[in-house]
Figure 1 (tube, rainbow, N blue to C red):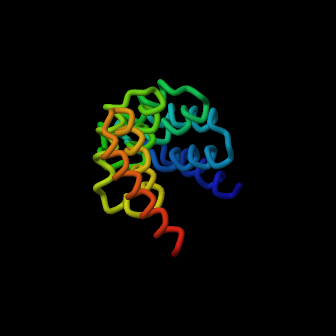
Figure 2: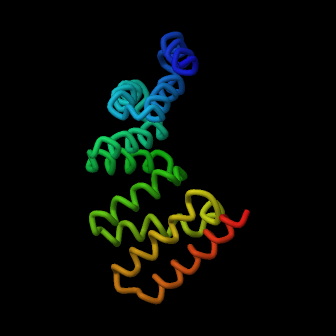
Length: 160
């Protein structure tokens, strides 16, 4: 509660700074209040339309609300502004896959799997998702290779 109050106070004191509003939205997301988070993010993006992290978090909030078209739009907007928002790219690729838009999913995932960040942590999942996309596109050998890489990396991470 004290973090929330501090962020709200900062947003009032610094109305043109996107970070306090972003912090408020992130706290709403942590509290499971995606609708409130998105309302804050909509206000933030009116004031700071080029704040890429705000678009990315809006994608997360929209997904939590089941508004998948809005999620895609927000994640795509975030990536146009900052192509290095890897979590937004992974989330978008997963949604592309869920819509069976495998070529789009593959394009996003191929950008992720070569990153050092994809060798540990949450981006390891990019290897598994790439396996699914390649399988759907008829590349069984590539799919098996991506899945083997995922299992190797996941095994290493679990043994730490």
